[in-house]
Amino acid sequence: MRIKIDNVSSESIAAADRIEKDEIAELQSTMEAIQNAWREEAKDYNVLVENLRAWTKCHDQRDVLTDITELATSIRAEMSPEALVTVGIGGSDLGGRTLHACLNSSQHNMLSKKARGGAPEVYFVGDTFDPGELFDMLQTLEERDLILKTVYNIISKSGTTSETVAAFLTIKASIEKALEAAGRDKAEYAQYIVATTGLNDKSELYNMNENQKVKFRGLLPVPDGVGGRFSFASAVGLFFLAMTTNEQVESIDDRIAAAIKGLKDAENDAYKHPLSDENVASNIAMINYLAEKKGKTSVVFYPYAKTLKLIGDWYTQLSTESLQEKGQGQNVIPTCGPTGNHSILNGVVGGPRDKVILFIRVEEFQAEKNYTIPTGSGIGGELAVLEGKTFGFIQNASQLGTENNLTDNGVLNVTISLPKIDTYNICKLLYTLQCVVAFEGDLRGLGRITYEQAGVEGYKKATRQILSA
Picture 1: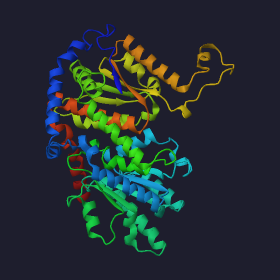
Picture 2: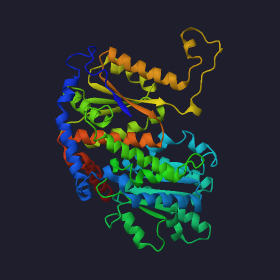
Picture 3: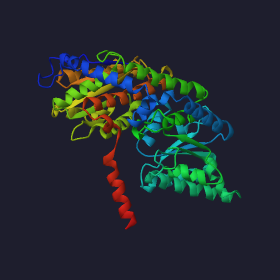
């Protein structure tokens, strides 16, 4: 994975808007100091926890990784579930959603279980009090007699997240109803539950499990020092990856191993020379930091492949909750290509010069999916150039054309090149984007505040006051 910053210092971009290569170079010593501070911090895991940066080492927690793979393997083998329901909000929801959108078939639930390689269908709920999605999901499972053929992963680090707990209690009641109809003990509901939470008595999920006669099928940790939006590489995301592995393609162990390698390699890249094009995180952080100083108050996050679109939602949360503190930080506008070209590009080209564009370009598309457009179709005019080309080739021509057009129109843009879409590269990319935000937080002097979310607590308190009235 590399970064392309050829258009930085481009003469087509007005002097007031340009980021000069000399400006980036001037930040080198600051970035090296940040890297050195990270190295020192990483010597003591307890310090990482205290600073809320334990997310940097989730891939080194061997005991937890073993628990994840063993639990997923046993559930797949012993229960052969027809569905997996993930119940969570924020990072506890977006981690799994993003991995699912990037790495599993877009038609996952429509495929036969055999075509999915034994993987269950996938559903997400618990991210809202709007009852529609939860009702529709439970109705679907009930109509198909799948309530007792489903595993429910309840994810809340605090174990007190209202939206998640409300959905969980409703699901629990549905499982108990199905158990009673089958002449079984309601307490057995717990055998259909995997709880991913803090493993301490501050979590109501943890306390519930401790106090009931039948324990949850699994209890996995959201580690101390890992905030929700930085949790995809913990059990939050890795259990989902393991459960949805297509075993016609790879084993659960192999998929998790590929994820871990991607995370480790991304960590290593973050310590390379700050100006190296292999240190994508450092370069993007410096460009965003300098761009904001030049009035670029928004980042258009532009993964050009539609498969990667949901990374935009994930990154929006990651960046805005972490960096928009003390009256600073950029807005994130997520889109994807070429759809985004037909929705926001006119405003980017013709509107105010207050945006920096961050493209993600996929270099190689999966061969079996990369259709070649037939020749001899009779199509004429300018469209004749499509014949004989693969969709992937045209997609990348479209991305490069968009990139060149923006540069020609004086719009600052940067491109991350992703070799391909697979478990290794997606996990490497997501970890790298977390490092982008971490570097930016330190450049902006936010420190530990980067990983907190004090602004979120207000609505929770106000909601509970209304409910208690």
